[in-house]
Length: 93
Image (tube, rainbow, N blue to C red; front, side, top):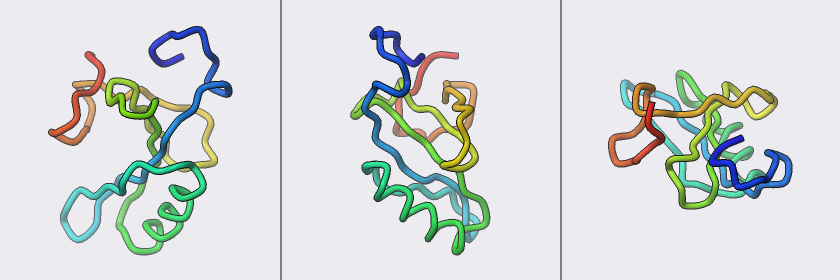
């Protein structure tokens, strides 16, 4: 459970985005609700070389988690020792 807060993953509100690479660059979409991020994922999967799916508690980069696709249920915490965008202050390793 990210950040504690006494809420299960199913109860917590998240925002989502797609990350990946294409054309030799790392790419990301804007944070959005799950439905919009799923649309972004479909587009990115057909246009980018590699895609992943991320979620976070709104506005809190320390809660970012990543999975390979929206269908996966195994979310991995994004920490300082994993790939992340430089402008994001993610959780400590």
